[in-house]
Image 1 (cartoon, rainbow, N blue to C red):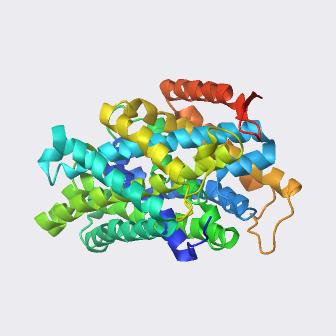
Image 2: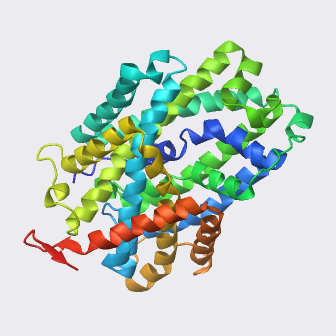
Image 3: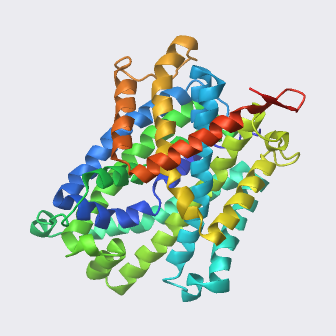
Length: 425
């Protein structure tokens, strides 16, 4: 692979993957479940996710190859566990591509009503996804620069919202929001976790980063700091400027329209569209790298492990992911697959957290490797946090995750031999 992506491009890539459509819906959903306490909950969630981010940062500092959590867990616990983590992570990626593509068409519908149905919806789903696919086939540098551009364009409306909104906040209003009757703490916990999710994909294209062992940990730490500050400020402004925030369908657009006027609502709507597009851009870039890494180890057709002779990108893996995601988006069955992302991400987080102490024992740390202070305390705390999150999930999510794991167990049995033939494992 061609190492072309610099440190600050990785930072932009990481932020772009985390700040998605969730931040535009978070204020209402969090307020509905937690009321005024939601601002503090956003901060606590950021600190909790920091434990997971630290685990990914240390694990990433050992490797300069693609694969992220799949690579970490495979090296720590062997191929069987690594494959299951890689399989679950990729399932979350392909369902994300489908759901984000449909989400983009729905968000675009506020600006272009034809995107809500028929041919217009089909074009709104297919054209952006095919464009992002083409950009990433041509080269990871173009994909990373697109991610950075979209990270900036999606963040600017949020910064305008914060900068102006902070002067319009009514403290009595912000501190008197009551949760809706039947507010669910478990739902709030998962909502907050997945608003911060996406950081795990930062290291997926590590084989194309200039200095991944140094730059990935740096990008992860910068990302969690930036995202926590933005999320906390957005939640506070929304609570303090929009009466009835818990019931708002578009809380940021509604709040911005109150203190910025009509153009403020339009700005936040455009920001939401770009935010979804930006997150999908990252998913189109990162997801195929899991397929590529799995195929290199004999899981799946050998063609998935090939690189384009000119662009040096995993073109077959990129096209395969889009070929699966596009009909899912058109059919609507993506909603079923999207529920897998809950358990799939937890498998990724749990596996990586437990892998860190094992990697310390098994591998010699490279010079200047990132090291979490406190010995095994933080990795074990991060693993325990994953269990808490899992207990907050709905039964249907856990059942779907169990089915996916069972399918992965069957697929593992058909690992290819070096000569390309399948063999029962």
